[in-house]
Every structure is written in structure tokens, then in C-alpha cells.
Amino acid sequence: SSPGLGAALEATGGNNLVTIGYTIAYPFGVIAVVLAVQLVPALMKVDIQKERVDLIETIHGHDSANEEDAGSSAPFTLISFVLCIIGGIALGSVRIPIPWVGEFSLGSTGGALLLALFLGARGRIGPFPMRLDVTVLSALRLISLAYFLAVMGIMAGPDIPGILARHGVALVGIGMVSATVSLVTGFVLGRFVFRLNWVLLAGAIPGAMTSTPGLGAAIESTGCDECSAGYGATYPVAIFCMVLFTKMIMLALS
Image 1: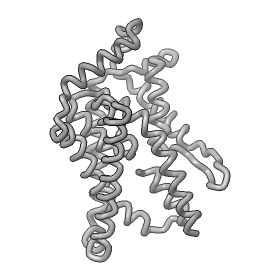
Image 2: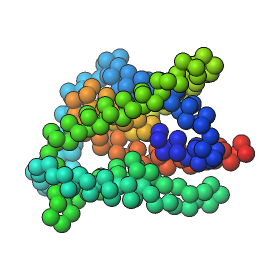
Image 3: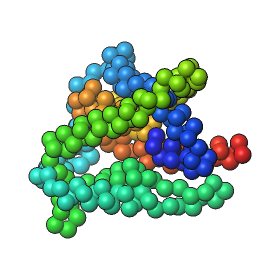
Image 4: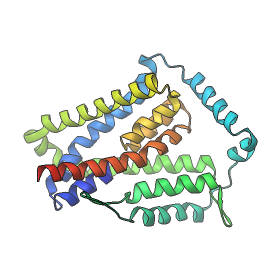
């Protein structure tokens, strides 16, 4: 999580070892999430098509009066898109003081997500439509995700040989174990305790792990953009908990 990394850097005074640990462990956590959302339906014999139909029927049943309006979208406009980005960055920069812990902020990613959820729910802000063409948004999502992963790979590449030689086993193990425990816990609670629809859960689990690549894999494996709803519901809470717990751990160890 980038917000979690930011909190750790702030708590340690910008120690470069934090970035190195993040860079090494992060890819293995991503791999675990991506594999899980693709393999779990096959292993657990989840009927994805049925889950998609059930979810769509549930959504329309709860909002039948606005069904036609909810599904409509306007042609893509750059101004609306930029408003979400700039407004999200501004929202994410707001710092909220938390007693005994310090300041908390959503960061640019959390701020952009929250603002986009709000604007998308409203549908329009003045003359600017906020329910934009899904085809264009999907293309932007794929390009942005590829860009993000390429940057992470380029950043990690030069340091991987040396760090793996010295701390590789421990860092890789931490990344894999943390991801696996989170995935199993999220799946068991979501599927067997709360009995969530798999399409929503497939997005909620990456959201709870603040894993954007996991969301991309969930959408690809289910063929359903509604995964984003589960992701959007859990992501802000996950950011808050991650930043809060990071600072609490640093306070406990100091």
C-alpha cells in the first residue's frame, strides 16, 4: 500500500530501508492477490456467471425506480476526469489529527477514489457529467495499471539481486505470508460468514489489501466491472487502518 509506505517513511524519518523492504515484498504480495482472485473460483467451483446475474438482479431490485438512469453514461469528457483527479489529490492532502497517533490523510489514491465514488453517485456536477463512457474508462484503467506495474518493476529491478542475497528469504516470506493470511481471512469471512456475492467479494478483498493490480485481475477473471463496487467500499477503510496501525507499531517499538 502506497499510503502505508508513506506512513512508515514518515514514522521512520524517511529511512531508505523502508522503501527497499516495500519494493522487494510488494511484487510477491501482488502475485498472491492476482493468483487468488483467478484460482479461487475454479478451486471452490464458483459459478461466476450465476454470481454476475444474481448481483445485477439484486442491484436492479434495490434501485428499480432509477434502473435506466443508473445504467446510463455520457461520452467521455477530459474536464470531468481531471476534476476527479485534482479534487481527489486535494482531498487526500487534508490531514486529520488523531489523538496519541498523529495525523492521518487518505493520500492521493484514497482521496481520488472517495471523491470519484461521490461524484459518480451524484451523476453530474453542474454542467459536467460524472458517469462517463465505460469503454474509455476501462481502457484508461488498463493503461494506468500497466504504467503503475512497469514503474514498480523498474524501481525494484536494480536492487533486487543484492537485497535478495542478503534478506530475500525473509522479505519474500513476509510478503507471501501477509498476503495469504489476508486473502484466506477475507475469503472465509466474506463468503461463509457474510455470504457475499463472489463478484463483490473479488473486488472487496483486493480493496482491503489496497491492491490495485488485484482489482484488475478480479475484473478480468469475473468479466464484470461491478467488482469495483466492492473495492471502493473496502479501500478507504483499509487505508485508514493501514496508516493507523503503522504509526501505532512504530510508537510501540520506539
